[in-house]
Each structure stands twice: as C-alpha cells, then as structure tokens.
Length: 489
Image (tube, rainbow, N blue to C red):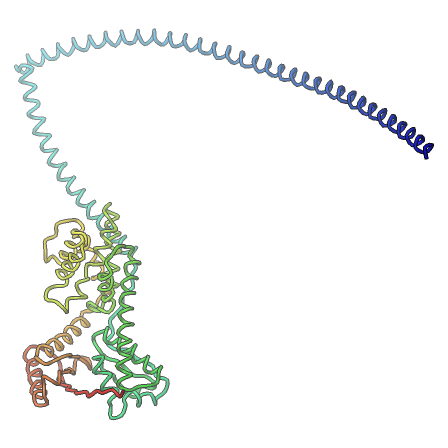
C-alpha cells in the first residue's frame, strides 16, 4: 500500500508537470498570436490613416482649386460692374442734358402758345380742366350705366347658376297623398269575422279609428278610407294585428287600436329623427323632433310636407354655401319652415306664424324664427336668410310634379266637414268618410238623448248646406252609444 501510494504520487507529479508544461506552451502560443494580431491591426490602422490623409489632402486641393476659380470669377464680375457703372454714369449725364434741353423747348412752346392764344398758363390750364371734366363726366355716366348693366346681368346669371346647381344637387323624392289603404286577408272567411255579429266589430272599429272600413267583392282584401293619413295608418296597423291574431271582438279591437296608436307615435318620432339626420342638424328639442315627424303624415297639394321640408333644407343649405353664409343655419331654418302645419289644426293662425311661435317657445335662434315667420311674407323680409328660405320653398313647390292642387282642396273640404260637426255641443268626435260623402258624428250619451241626436243630425246637415259647396249629397250619421261595463271578481 505504501508502495502504491508513492507510485501514485510520482505519477500525479508527472501528470501535473506535463499539464503545466502544456499550459505554458498554450500561453506562449496565445501571446505570440496576440502580438501578431496586434501588429496586423496597427498596420491596418496606419494604412487607413494614410488613406484618409490622402483623401483629405485631395479634397483640400479640389476645394482650393474651386475657391481660386470663384475668386477669379468674382474679380471678373467686379471689373464688369465697374465698367457698367461708368457707362451708366455717362448715360445719366446724357439724360440730364436731354432733360434740360426738353425743359427749354417746353418753355419756348408755352410762351409761343400764350402769344398765339392770348391766354396765360393758368387760364389755359383752367379752360383745359373744365373741358376735361365735362368729357370725364360723360364718360363716367356711360361707364356707370355699362357697369350697372354688366353687373346686373352677371348677378342674374350667377343667381340662375346657384339656383340651377342647387336644384341639380338636391334630389329628394316626393309622395302623392293617397286616401285609401288596402289590407290583405288570409281568406274570405276573415271578412265575416271582421264584420262580426250584427256588424258590431266593424262598427266598433270605425268608431274607434274614425276610418271607413269598406268590405266589397275584392278577393281577400278590405279597403280603409279616410282623408286623415294618421287615422288611416292607425287603422291599418290595428287591422293587420287583428287579422294576424285572429281574435276579433270589440274589447280586442279597442286593445289593438290603442297599441297601433303607440306604434304610429313611435313612427312619428323615428321619422322626425330620420329627417334631422338626413339634413345634418343637431341639438333639436325632442318635442320639436316629434312635431316634425307628424309632418310625415301631412301633405300640401299632394306633396308630402316632411319630404318637402327636407328638400327645402337641402336647397337652402346649398344656396347659403354658394353665397358664403352659414349653411347649417340655413338647413335648420329650411327643415323647420313648415313645422306650423303640424299644429295649425289645433290653433288659430297661419302655419308660418304658428311655426315661428313654436320655435320661439323652444329657444331657437331669432334669425331662424324670423325666417320661418317671413317665408310667406306675413312679416317683412329683413335678412338674407329670410330670402333664401323663401326661394328654396318656392323652388321645391313649383318644380314639375311636386304638387297637385286637387288633393289639397279635397282634404280641406273634408276638414271643413269635421269642423262643422265638432262645432255643436255634445259632439265628442267627427269623422268624414266615404270621400266626403258621409260624416259620422259620435256624441256623448249623457249630454245628447235619442231625440236630440235626430235634431243634431238635421242641424249639422243644414249648416253644411249653408257654409259649403260640394257635388251630390252628404250623409250625416249621428252615433249615440251607451256601454255598460262590469267586472266579475
């Protein structure tokens, strides 16, 4: 074991000596390699420095050459300028000499002219000025007249261009008012259910909606007739719901008519919002939006009033933009100019004045309020916006196919029929139906008895004969209905 230990120590010592020797060799090789790399890097650096130095010297030589060239050019220009300056001085001297000669000649000419005309210089000058003034006044008058004619023609041409461009750029559809709506039925058997036992369903429906329900030989269809489009739309929606549901009786009819009224009110609000979005105006009071939407169901000479208002707004905006005015305010005034037609049946007065009062109530801009009031010249036109709205309204109204007078006259006649019926005490509702050939009057049973109902029908008929002109005859139907309602609990 001792021998093995000593042998192991001797072997480990030799291995250690060999390892140290190899390590020293590796270190020596690394040092030699590092020295060689150091020398090569120094040589490369010196070569790079030499190249940079050479390039720098070459660039300096080129710059010096360019500077010498520029210096020679500048010297040549200075010499040229000096020569030109000498020439200019000589010419100035010549000009001064010539001017002195001209002055001498002028003096001699003036003296000769004074001798010939026997006038002093001041007198001749005054006479000449008088003649020039007379000629200038004539020329000025002629020029002013020509300018007025020219500018008037230019203004007319520009106005026509603005209006024609506004009409071309504004393409708004219009609708012609209809007085009937057709409701499709799933089968002929549905007509009997709509009529009901002894006609109670159809009577209830017509009483609640104020619309005439016409059931004829048309297959699988019934017709709703009324001059009031809002009533007709409520009746159409309610009847479609009843037909779809299948349960048709007076209580169900009343429920569906109530739902239809709410739907039509929502549609009115949606149409008002659509109109303001289409025109691009903001911050309009919600009540004005709803009132504006009612115009969707109004017509003027067959032209849908809401579509007409949108068209007027677009035309007014285009015209205002061409004249470098506030197109946003013009569009707002154009959209609201006929809003009074939505409330003219509730209050006395023209729609322009009613509309301006309504807008004033909701704090609209005073210029817009005045433009709405003045678009039919019921108040004086003051600002340019008033004229723009009036012109846009006229363009929308008079363009071909926009309006039909016959429908407007027809609707006014039906409204007059209802107005006469409503003027009597005890009348709750009045509906003109059958294209104005019949008036159905619903009275309060507590205030009007059976005998009074007969007398009321006679009085209404006589008043219609006295105040209206109409073809044929008009039937007056007074309806007095008493309902007894009790609940089983």
